[in-house]
Image (cartoon, rainbow, N blue to C red; front, top):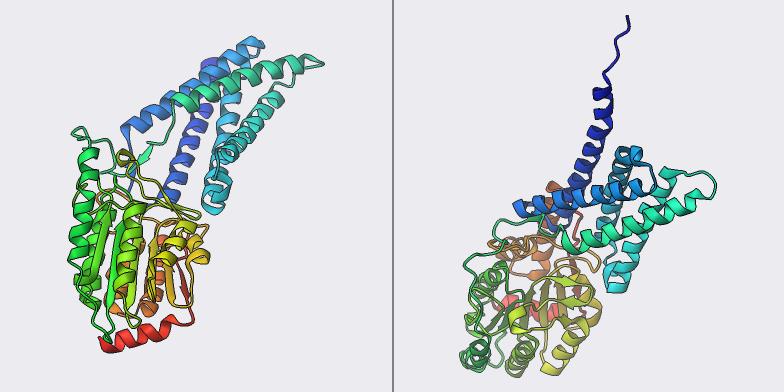
Length: 427
């Protein structure tokens, strides 16, 4: 007698395959988020709960739609194919986000991409039904309405932004609101103290006037980098008495003046007034970023982001002379075209269409900041020679972690080299 599987075992297989497809979908999502945000994160309990709720909502929508067209027998197959398709589309979307971020620059473009993925999902469901005659139109319309309604609920109520998080970046139960009125009342004093402490320029002696800016308030790494870079620039160039520091920090809101556009413009102008023709301005800005945008993020203080064009105008208005400008942010290479000049050395953490990594709360350095300042500039006082050391180190770390290469950039003006050579010879 030939043994056969029992009906119960046979009916369980499609369900297990469907559960496997759901698992593949979420594993692909986690892998894509890790590739974009970098290593060091972990799954959050809230994110996993949201992922389960989202999956359950999608399955419930499929049950409702298939019941309305009398094809509940296709449920396991629909779940399997839809979640596998979703995994492929998700990986494609995340890849586009890293390689072509301009596609996500506006809400309209994001909505268009989302609409395209929904259309592909609806097409899959209609193909799966394959209703005879004109019944396909009715079945397709029913499934489209139910599917799109389900997707709208999922996107609105069950987002998975918190699925992959960094250990110290979660919500703090002891969160204390910032006294914004006191914060702004302190700005004149804080800026005045820093400007008043600037050492005067010595005519004929090459010196460094520096600015270190950390732009994002809710991740302590940027404040930490401001202080670490200050120490390294002082050790290498003796710039401690001629350095201004600006930082957005929720935990220490009045340690330094705000990193907002008004304070940045004033800081640049103060350096420009003091800098002699033989001196070098060393400007370091670290934060998040996008194409032609540098984040000055302190939501409670109402700060607004800095564009590349605004930064160009600030530099021109400040009267700053020869300068080394280091912009450490995602897509920071997009600033080069706007701010490059014959007497400037521009260094960025990433190419204009690439992200950089390591921006997380509790970290001591971003990946590029550590490679350029803590490794490169400690070993080579000349930033032109420090850069290839940093670029090689960044590439090595990103390759080891399986990340898309950030490709740090350098642009040397035709006149800045001679000024740097005189400065380095004097040191």
